[in-house]
Each structure stands twice: as structure tokens, then as C-alpha cells.
Length: 158
Image (cartoon, rainbow, N blue to C red):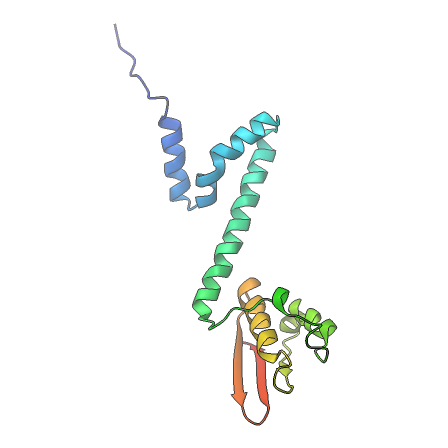
């Protein structure tokens, strides 16, 4: 009489976690059980479960890539246009700044030159544009400053 080997019930889970680590899918590894329970409770089919998991993985990868590019760029300060008070600086052209945030100037390979008196939002705008254009979208940009009687800030493709 042959004895059948007892396979531990947690073997598939251990193998799955091993494969997810080997495939470098950290979000899948972290979230698969929780999302599986949610999908089971909602009676979601397998393709939709995989869709949710792949969306989570992609979003997390984009977030990590942006964080990595910010670290690599070694920005002294990372600004966001959310904090820019357009009402406090009425001379700042809000429409132009919001157009620049879309980073279409990078696709057209155009240069951006910000000129203005002290306190008009040049540094804040350039920091947020540089971080959003190079770090958020994955485009390579360079920010150079030349301080003279007027501050010039140039953002260009590299």
C-alpha cells in the first residue's frame, strides 16, 4: 500500500508569494489576498480581479517611479502648483502656468523662460514645472538658473 504524501495547504500561497517576488510585483504580493476577498464578496469574475490587481500595480509603479525621479533629481525643494496662490500674485498669468503644467512644450521641444520681478512666483512655478515635467511624466528636463539683475529660469529638454 502506498502512502500519498500530504501536501501542506499553504503550499500554493507560499509558491504564489515566491513567484510574485521573483516577478517583482510587490503590489500584487501585498494586495492580492485583500482584493481577492473583496472580489469574492462582490461576486467579481477572475478577469476583473486581475484587472483590479494590474491597475493597482501600475499605479503603484508610477508613484514609485515619480518618487525615484524626485530623489535622483535632488531638488532642493519640490513645489506643487496646488500651493501656489494665484490671487496673491495677480501679475502671474494663471492660464499660461496651467498650460505649461500639461508639459506640451516638451513634446514641441520648446524652451520656457520665466522673467519677472522679485516675488512674482518664478521659483515656485519653475520648481513645480520642473518636478512635474521631469518627475511626473518621466521626461528628462533640466532647470538652470542665472542670477543677475533679473532672475532667469530656463527649463529645457535634455
